[in-house]
Every structure is written in C-alpha cells, then in structure tokens.
Length: 508
Ligand SMILES: C[S@@+](CC[C@H](N)C(=O)[O-])C[C@H]1O[C@@H](n2cnc3c(N)ncnc32)[C@H](O)[C@@H]1O
Image 1: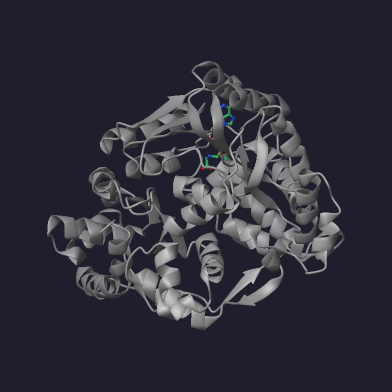
Image 2: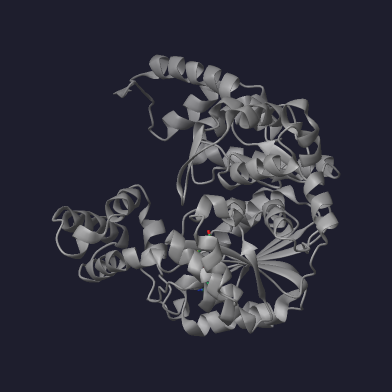
C-alpha cells in the first residue's frame, strides 16, 4: 500500500455519489429551525470547502447550481481529484477547485476564508492524528460565524455492527487477489455465519438487513466504509468536546426531522433529558434512547442567535419544492418511535400546492385548505417531507435565471456522459441549489429532448453500444425492434409521470 494513504484504504476509488445533506439551502434551513444565524446568503456569494471529497460529485453538483458561490473540494487521492477536475472542465465550472491535498496541506495552505466546511464520511474513518489535523483546519480556515457539517458513525447504534466489520476486515486480509473479489467473498461469508444464528449472530437483530443492504452495495463503497485501518464510532459528547477546541458549538442535527422530539422519543423521556445540564450529555442520551448509528451534526463558530421574530420571518420567506409526484407521498412514515401516520387532510392540499409551484411557508400557510392548521403544523409537515427527500427547501427566486444558465451547462455535460456510462446520475437544480438523481434511461431521454432527437433511438444507440438490452416482466427483450418498442413505452411513462417533477426542479 502507498505511504500517502495514512491507513486509509488505497487502490480502490470511492463511489460517485451526491449527498443532498451538504446543500446550502438544506443546511441553512436546519440552522434557522434551531434559531441560528446562517453564514451564507443563499442568493449571493459564499465559500464552501468539502474536506475528503471522494470523487467530488457533491461539490461539482453544488457548484453547478451556485454560480456566485465558490467550492473547494479536497482529497489526497489523485484518482478522485483527476476525475473531478475532468468533470469540472467538461461542465465549464469556473467556481469549483478540486485540490489533490492532504488535510494538513489544506489546513496550512490558505486564509480564514471559509463560510462552510463539510466533513461527510470522514471523521470516523481517519486516525486520531488526522482528526486533530481536522480540528486545526477548522480553527485556521473557518470564518467567525461559519458552519461545519460533520457526519460520523455514532454510538450506541454502531455497536451492533462492530463484529461484522471485524469479519469483513479479517476475511479480506485472509485472502489474496483483487480487492473487489475479496470483498464480495467476505460479505457472502458473513451471510453464511449469520445463517448459523449462533452466539453474537443470534442477538444481532439488525444484522440480516445490514447484510442484505451490503449485498446491493459496490465493493468501492464497502472498502471505504469498512476496510480503513481506522474505524471509530463516537458518542456525540466526544465529538462535540473534540470540536470545542476549534471554538465550535453544537448547533443541531442537519436532518430537520431529528429535531422533532415527538417522532424520536417516548413522551416520558423529555423530563429525564431535561435533568442533563450539559447539552452534549443530553444529545448523547437522545442517541441512547433512539439507538442512533449515524449522525449528521451541525457546529457553528461564534454564530449569532436569531430573535424569535427573525427566525419566523426567515422560515416564512423560505420556498419549498416537491421532489416527487404529489400522488407518491406516503400516508405513513417510519420514525424512531415507530409508524407515524401523516394526516391526509393536511398533507394532501400541501402536496397539491407544492406541485403547482415553489411556494413559501407564508404562502402555504395562507391557503384556505391549510390556514386552519396554523403555520407551525405546516412547518412541521415540511420538516418531515424535507428530511425524507420528498420535498426540499428551495433557493430564493432572485438569481434563478443566472443559476439556470450555469446548471444547464453542467447538466448538458452530465447527460452527455450518460451516452458513454452510468457513473454520474445527478443533475444540478437551479431551483433547489441541490442535486436531482436521474437514471441512465431518464438521462438519455433528456439528452434526446435537448437535441430534438428521437428518445427511443437515442437511448437504444447508447445502451446497445454497451451490449445492454431491456427486460419486460422479468423477460429479456431480444433484438432492436422489441427494445425500441419498450423504450417508446418507457418514454411515454417518463413523460407523464416524471417529467413534470423534473421541469418543476428546473432540470428539464
Ligand atoms: C468515505 S470518503 C467520503 C467522500 C465524500 N465526502 C462523500 O461523502 O462522498 C472519505 C474520503 O476522504 C479522503 N481522505 C482520507 N484521509 C485523507 C487525508 N488525510 N487527506 C485528504 N483526504 C483524505 C479519502 O481519499 C476519501 O476519498
């Protein structure tokens, strides 16, 4: 293994993935909900750094929809950065820099000019020395008033998976040959062990579901999640205390729904939690009561508090967009407290209003069908929908035309890529300031629409060049004619069911 990896898994690239929780509009919404002043003017300019950016997809997409903001994405893996720089060149991104640097090099290399620093999928997967460097980086580079996003494997929920990780690490080390093959074999071996239902395996209720999900993940994901030398799960209190050295205070969870006690905790828990005086201790007790295995936390450096009136005004002025067709909203959701029904007399008219435009909370709350529930109930419904990726806070209307010019160029590059392969599946939305996932087929249909070409023929040209054919009702379709007929049927469905949402989000 190369010396530069510092124990981090080498020789295998990370997956190409976009993480919506890093979107400025969502971060701002979560901060405002907790009464903190956000460091970014969403319609203006700000600077954002993603540390340990992997393939750089999140930063590239976000740069694609925020032409006035600057994005710096840092990773020491040259393969990751070379790929991200190629995409940035193809998409004409002038506001994103992809830097092949270690945490230490980046910490030392610039001014205290960052409004946001995001550390997604990094904290638990690097050594204590590197975490100290990250604290130093936040101390040196994050502006006063700035925001840090930190995700990590949390205790106690991760306890359940520690022995599984051990089996995967030992099994891969026990074999020789290409890493992806060793990973596949290790996952299969862990499944066979689980099937014995003996000892620890008999007690690990969540294990079969975790293994099923691992079987659907790529070796690239599994390598970066489980096979690093360093792999540490944390109590929230420990992370909060380590980050205090960078003058950071915990501001709240990044996922709005996790701020809603009634969905997370039994009613009798609140008086017990109130007995804990230290907020870090209180938050850790919450994790014990919800058995949380992963946290996405927001920390602020000297950020101001909003007055109640400022908070209300900011929330009322926030626009929201629906990410799915209105008929696809669930009637029941799964929360830490169990199954929670979504009242249809509120959610029905809310979904309809969101499908008709990008209304603000104030506009939604004033609608006759929603006014009787009051603004707080509408806001809480939106907190649930935005947490489940069914809706999202949108950017202010100001600047949307300029954003659309840049995102359109970015999206053209992504769609063009899909003619050749399926690694990039996220378009930049000038409405959300965030990514919108599309399947390869959807990307090819959108490409054909842009070119005024026949959608079925465009899709077939790309798929057949890769030796791919479609299936219908589980049966493989042979020959050009059968595939073209199926593609025409799928394009028809796409036009009716999916295109209205993509148009609303400004990506079609
Ligand atoms: C699990 S990946 C997460 C990637 C990305 N943030 C995401 O969530 O998609 C962690 C990344 O951190 C990078 N990394 C690990 N240690 C590093 C270091 N000391 N300096 C720079 N990058 C590092 C790895 O190369 C890897 O791409």
